[in-house]
Image 1 (tube, rainbow, N blue to C red):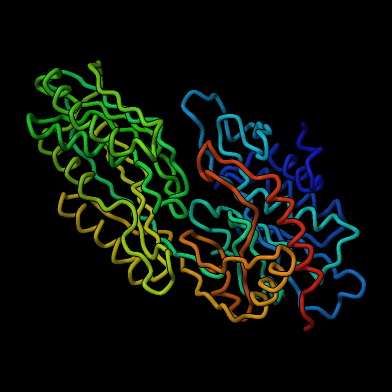
Image 2: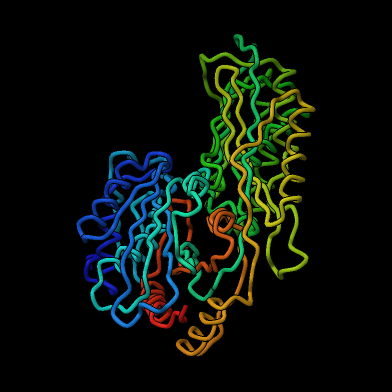
Length: 480
């Protein structure tokens, strides 16, 4: 079945058009031009602000002029992850999609349903001629996935809407009214590198699920960086190690799925035998949640230089000590992760070390508590630490008019109550709300699985449900 034949056809048509346009974070020029052209072709007022956000305005349909005005908001960029055996260039190619039962997925790459389905939905409302709605402002932000610079660059006064509907969550039975803030923690150091003295061993971790470093952080998934750190630390028990290179993980907001380390040791066979014992333990630990996990430890060759045994020990100790995963559960909201950290990327090449972390929390003080713990560990090892890209969380307001309306409509429409929740992910609502404090905000969306990983997939029946719900919300927006 072609995507164009799936209901609602208008959304899948626009999603297909959007996914034909490359849109990596921080490289959104093509998709900005695409959305700008889309608005202009409809004859709607379309602007691009200083940072690249696109705003398209559409007047209210007949009889809806006295209703509160709405901002429909989604982000244009997508997380670009692919399997190692897939040859794909996210900067030049469109996403290749396929249908698998009730799901739409991509062929070995992220799908971009996060947040492409939200973008496609807004496009569908803008081009519709038979959907009742109040005055609309469609806000398409950039760079949500790697810094939220679009939302941060949105200036006060650019929007006039009274209610913001963010279409960027991943469970169709949830109404989201709060989210976590975040801060990037970057650890760096430069070491002298020279010819290694021992035998070369290569360690490889692959086959992990990966996933969203906020929404999936509590699920116990394996982290390739942490597993490599455990293996290297165990290797230190019997002999010294010279690190040659580490290439593990990827984007800050994705749980690392695979990684490699190349090292020099005095006796490769002894090292492999000792670490293989831990390998078996790790595979047993993760047998249920990570059935695809593979750990390979083998003799190898390398012409690259290594850092000293002393410096290698500092790096390995740091990898072993950095906090990864849930730091604190919320004492106020049941089952909500309050604070966490994702050790996202470890790179060592030619003596240049970089460790990328994304620390999240719905409470600013605990966010910095985690970040400062990372800083303390790294600085004890003589490394440099920088905090950047900090953004606020979004404080829930469960009694707001739009939340109560959506709860009522959902219950009447689907004969069950929705889950009104806060999430452990970075939504742009907190940032936008800082400049528009009077604006009521809600986030919701269709069911998506495996966001930020090549296993990402979007549920077809859920998208139908979401579309129907959104149209009912727009038709029932209260009067000014």
